[in-house]
Length: 99
Image 1 (spheres, helix red, strand yellow):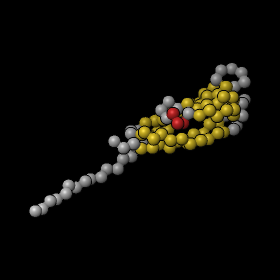
Image 2: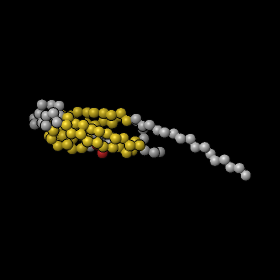
Image 3: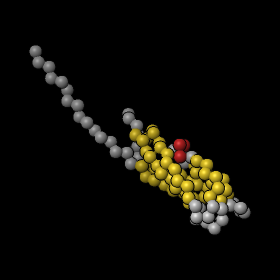
Image 4: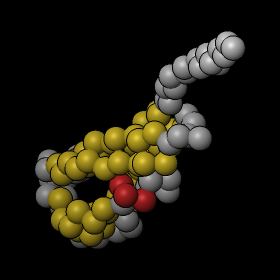
């Protein structure tokens, strides 16, 4: 079976009213999308691309961003993307032998 690649563009934005430290993204299905982003000040974003190279079937990819505010518990946000595998089929015609 052939594998396909899925390409993702992930953008994390701090929409809160305080800076977030130790911001990171975890992706349970696509480890190449895991990232540590450091600190995000109010209103700032960080974007990056990543790829999954072993795609055989449709799935929904989920990435979870988390960060630590100056006070209180860690905050999180979740994003998802549906991945649809398109396959191309070809027919092979057998050879004809005469003789």
